[in-house]
Length: 348
Ligand SMILES: [Zn+2]
Image 1 (spheres, rainbow, N blue to C red):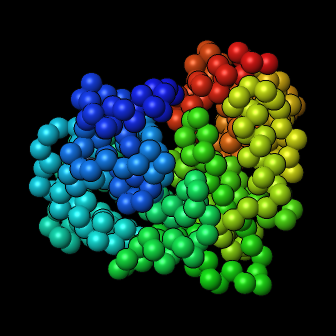
Image 2 (image 1 turned 45 degrees about the vertical axis):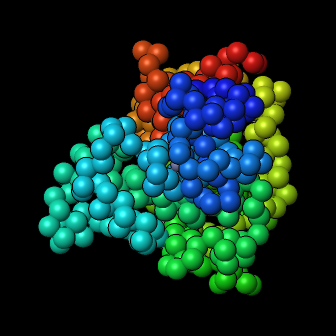
């Protein structure tokens, strides 16, 4: 994780449009929902309205949109026309998904769009759309804003992009939540980026990094499984989880005792149970995990069960690595897996 300079230093750089800070941080403006480079020519916000990010993607996931003056997503000075056109299309209806088929209908080659976005923004067109959608769906959960109504009334003028994005991600509009089984959804900011947590009265069902691959599919699957309506909010379980994560990241307490609700097959459940027995600071191989399950041949099934864990960090699937010591996969990104392992080895 790239560390940010102290806040007062960044704010000063911002005021002075100091180009030596270019690329070191990005700045989101809470009052406008826009994020900028430090050198943006636009009028500078008050310090209390500013949020800092180390990467432009983090700003997108936090619900900010790119400034039209300083173009913080651009890596090259000129925006190719195709990217310009597609980004405008996304902004005009941010909750909608533009599929490869839609692109073809418009006479655009999907692989060209993918390539150009990848080169220019460092992510594919689909990943860009997903980041924007998730960002909008979570923007009411942004720090300092808790009331969903405020966001609905103020944040999204014409196309009610928030509403569309929310339904896209969670299936049901928040207003339909009355009298049904509710799953509360909270955004938790961690030093490794924002996470999403879901809990009902019985316990915590999901904890994932917001940019995790396949998160939307996982959420839909969970929704089907629990038949719950998902609404932004908080309960005691989520409060406890937030505190426990704070302690974890500060290195104060690296173990968790939280009510976790899992939805696996008997085999997956036993694998996840075994994961929680791996000690803090210890890493084991998939083969070793299979052995601990008295099923030494089930290495691949164990790896699959690991991948299906939807409770990142608290069910420590990051403590399982390749037999040769390599990190192997992690849906939240290998850099996070490495960070978690180092953090635990350094603090237990
Ligand atoms: Zn700007």
